[in-house]
Length: 222
Image (cartoon, rainbow, N blue to C red):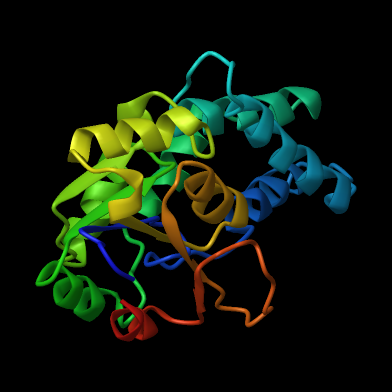
């Protein structure tokens, strides 16, 4: 991709391993432990929708920990669960610090950093991402989080703030991530080139410039 000066990576499920649905499963188990019957499909849908609504453009900004705690508290209150939402949120979030990166992540980051400026831009709290990167020895020239920028992808302001801080034009950047809305459609609307990390080999077209199934494919593309 010609004229590329910088690479911006999303973090979670892009180079940081995640277990989809692990948090909501733990909360469901906490509630069921008190003998409460739950429609799990409906619960999961409401859990997801709460986050979507909380991070929408125009909503008062709340960091991930605040949203997570409020979401747990809403369900504990609904089912009259005598547990501390903030304590359970803290305990669960601490597990995030121990997350690992995909096996090829460090090699790819190091290789790209020899040719480009490499950044990370993610919807997350700053301390969580910085600790994960430090533990896994992932180097980047800069790290941007929703907590720092006070907005969430795919808000256009998120990408504008990152580009401004890096002193880059959109045409000089490739954005890489796993989320069609946050890492493909949002960056494309901002004028950036994109690479979609499609680990499930769906083959879907979101308008991305390239598709990979693993990070190790990226250096050969750019």
